[in-house]
Image (tube, rainbow, N blue to C red; front, side, top):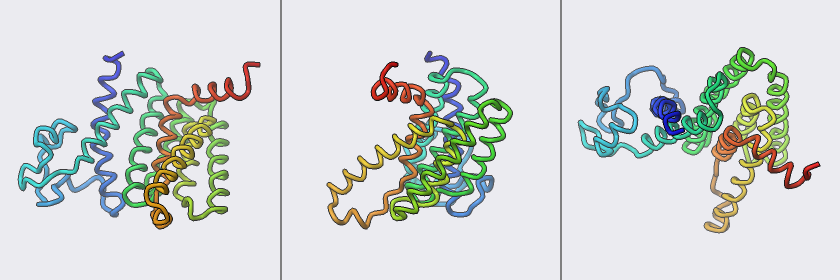
Length: 253
């Protein structure tokens, strides 16, 4: 089991390094292809040996080799998170063609969660390619699931759109589109994904209200990270959550 996680874990760390580029550059309207990575303090181009996921940050003790300024711990955290999630998906879901859909979906959720946390936006430049890729890949790998995926995507989008129209201050159109895209990947399991997102978001909202009181009303708490968490939970345990709900509330028969 441990050996099965090594290769996807290493691949996930590399993908996480790329996600750091997307997270930093895309909200700023910069190209994610060029130029090569540079230090945010001195502008010096980062050498290939200093850009190895996880290891370079640790070896450099979190500082730029050229100027000595600190490099945010965010970078290795994103790389480690992606590595762990990729390994977990492979271990839980097994080795099969649908990994070509599931792993990019997990990567997309990580990028969206961090961007929304930082900038309070869920960028179309991430969602649109993700939606197109999800549909094309599903048509090629699991065509029998396309009707369910399309219905789930449309249903999730419509459900959250109505909620956003009723309570526009609670969430934005980015959240609506995100849940719709999640439906294109998760199918029926977008339901537990949304439930987990709303549950964790509600608990976080209550905690913030208890901590900051009336000042919490002025705080803009992004909802995208909670939806992304729900998506990851559903990716790893969607069927189990549905079975648990069925057994707990609908009985065995």
